[in-house]
Picture 1 (cartoon, rainbow, N blue to C red):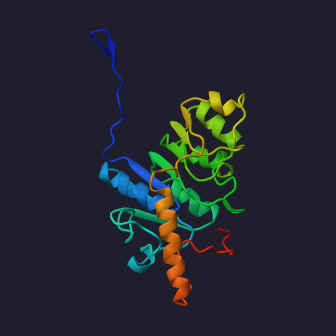
Picture 2 (cartoon, one colour; picture 1 turned 135 degrees about the vertical axis):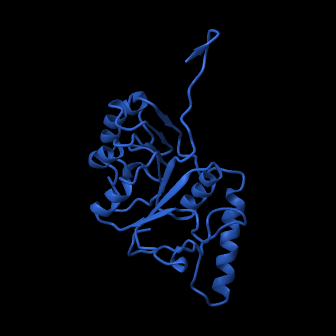
Picture 3 (cartoon, one colour; picture 1 turned 180 degrees about the vertical axis):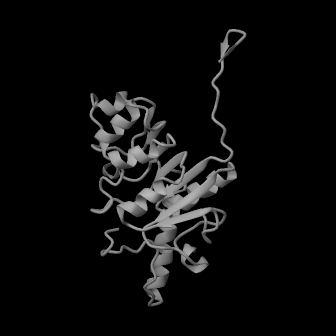
Length: 219
């Protein structure tokens, strides 16, 4: 659009935009908080059902004023590990999909051609701040270049680092950053705070540690 010889970009409306967090852990909950502040409607997806207020609470490390400790922000909450359940979530009219799931055998290639076809119904914009192999790179490039999805913002890629001549660099409407989304001036302060809290719990004979690894789940 031009006016008086100047070029203006017509921005999409943000009100009533559907944003979904695939994995509603600490990162997903902070994403939801920021999104709600902008007036976005939030959908959440978790592997296990969260049907009660108690199950939606997050007892992990959350600095005051951040995240969604009570799990109150999502207007819709999806769960399940089957393709059908994941597709139901992806087909819920998403304008933006934020991927923050851990990389496991179950999540590798989680977003591939069939999933892009579902996201293409709305023309979803994809954000991956998790791990590159969760998204099939070849299928992502095809979805971008065919304009099946609106675009992608990637802090992670597969392979990583991305070779200079890789076709993902020249794909349509993609922004790539070098795996730095976790970098902040608070990173080491919070890291040491978690270590302190876990050390206190250990000295008290407790085993409810923060960021405890579940070997069965793989993360």
